[in-house]
Length: 84
Image (cartoon, rainbow, N blue to C red; front, side):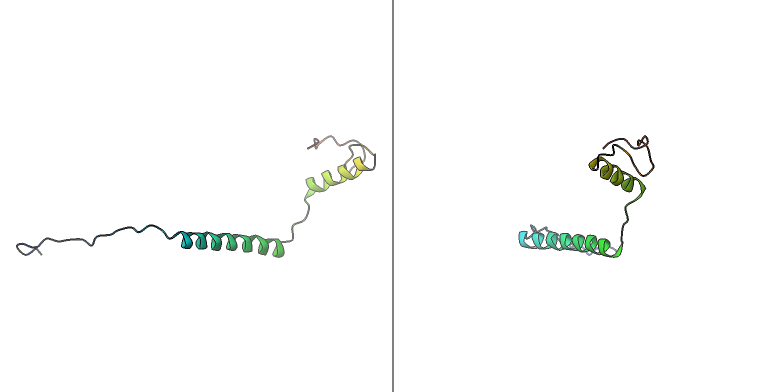
């Protein structure tokens, strides 16, 4: 199909309007609120336990406070985990 004589095909003019600062702040606040809710939900639903290395360092700290030296879960000096 062609165009009629004297008529041109025109596309709609698209203009961008500057973003409303209040809307941007509201959207950012909503995103942050959703992120916080996701973190709290994960903390509540997933009960993390102290893993092996963490418990080892915990025992070393306890032994240091009690004056027993740098000793972990196994008797004798701790050779595998360096001080943090």
